[in-house]
Image (cartoon, rainbow, N blue to C red; front, side, top):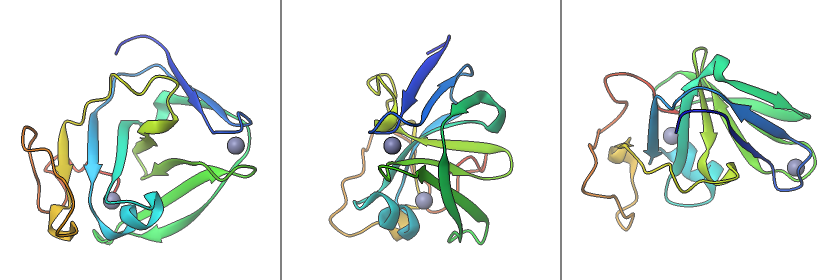
Length: 139
Ligand SMILES: [Zn+2]
Ligand SMILES: [Zn+2]
């Protein structure tokens, strides 16, 4: 996954490119990621916050995550595609918004304490009840 990878929103008004290798690929089962994704979990490629160059207008809002940290969630002004969740040092990019999401196998499942009873959690990756020790999750 080295080199430059690209992605963007559904309507293509927002585009981005990343030059760093992911810190992690998380499935986050916290309630806020459920709410934002509209499904059982958020699926993110976690990068250092400086790794992405973004072109186009995003808008967003701050939420207090279950971890009590403030997360900024950003989406396209035009089509509303969920794009980014930011903490001060990390940028979480929604996996489906990459032009090629195929390489981004999840590396950890986090906040499984908040998972719905019917949620599917892969059993071949590490699971964390809340945030992982490296604190790289979107929550
Ligand atoms: Zn858009
Ligand atoms: Zn989450």
